[in-house]
Image 1 (cartoon, rainbow, N blue to C red):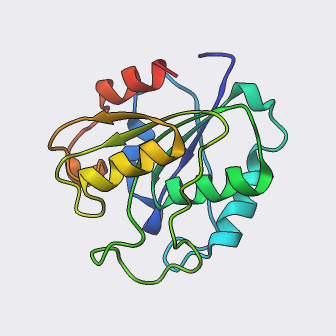
Image 2 (spheres, rainbow, N blue to C red):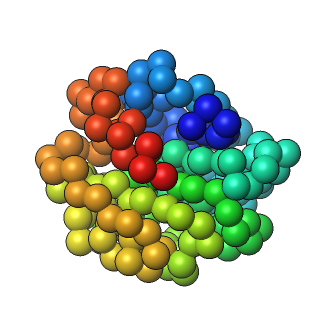
Image 3 (spheres, rainbow, N blue to C red):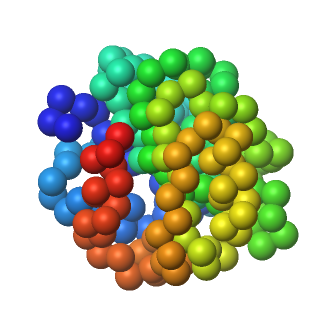
Length: 173
């Protein structure tokens, strides 16, 4: 994985620090910073993703997206039609009643197949997406689906630390 470019895409409110800990120090990760973390606009986020990764060879790019960023990546892939690259992500459901307010343009969820290899990682007790909806997203995105059990929203509050299992999942891409 040393010749790949791994980008961390946090979700709403910048997702907290644990997202960058997958694999500890084993990976060189670049965090994509969005202009507005608290009241994000889909078009702004999609544009930022494209601007950051455009200079890199698509076949060497890995996107590691969390929550709302998974939705942004689906919209980015549809808009910019990059046919190579890889994605590992744990989505949230912007259509769910439990989803926090304040986002613009992310719904409805884009449900077209992603044009690159992808893995949806889901927890069976995530407050922002049910296991069934995460599976539904994976099916529609033509993604591999992985249920990691009761791990919450797969963020810093989940207590995963360096999360070696997350690194192993990433290695499969």
